[in-house]
Length: 427
Ligand code: S3P
Image (spheres, rainbow, N blue to C red):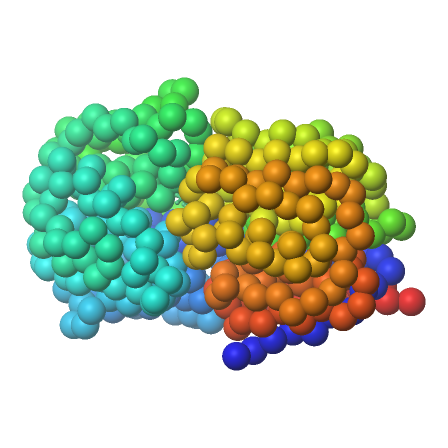
């Protein structure tokens, strides 16, 4: 198994541009494949998850060009243009691919089977199967593999019990095909990239408070899509810079969609020096430059409505909390247990090895800081965000840190090591 050895560094300095946002990249491939006409997507993520989405649409007859580079040409064939794949569809490690795709496959004129890797086959799919069945879908399985028999769908009005953009998006995508107006309401706002891109591509979609609704049957327009930098990937460097005194970095062209910027709000509340410059908008998504300096942090409580806005950044925030003065409480984050690994358990295991004072809760963690961290043998549990958070931990810990199971980094951020090398100041 691959491993990475890390030694402490002095600080992070310089300016970088991050690879394209993973969530927006998936949606660009999906919606451009369903649009009528050719779409040029630039700045797309080259992570394995996004490559899997591209391969899936290739297997359904969409001749996507440029897969593996950061620019794709996607000749969309319209809502009814997909063809039956010859093989079982493999989504790899990607929950977003599997859940969003379920909504589309449920409405096709063909049957298909979708599966994924060992981790994805353990993740709950009932959360998408249940609403899709209410729309008239026929799906066998509550965990992957799912066997989906395409049906004519009807619109529903649905209230999700969890805030999940994957669930919401699966329903809205099925709603593109359904007769009538499909409506989804969630308990707290999750990322709204699907709604924004659908609107940009001229779908009949409206968003009000916690409800999104879409009218079925309208074809999507093909328009150029430029993907902003990934704020989830940016958050690792933000925390690294904050925790290493004397750091000063600029992260250019990062996506600043308000449903994703919980990490900035929380780090600022903890006392971090973060500034935003050059705020602008491209294809209905806000982006800007983030400037971060070394800062002293204080512990806070992270709970409630902000959780869906920061769900993927909680591992790196937990690391930040070990260096904050006082107690940090993360709660209402039970969803962390059904990510690529059980992230609550994985954090408690690894941060304890590093000497942090961390307590496991059913729906989160309590971290008492500040503590000196020491290097040790750590395990990613095959989770890309865990692996990268632990590598940042190694930069601020005493002695050598070894993180095993680092292959998974390519899932979201294959350029991570070279990007870190550009900011690292060792002496
Ligand atoms: C994602 C939604 C979130 C997030 C995941 C990407 C998306 O998952 O954790 O990394 O692109 O829609 P949930 O919908 O399960 O919360």
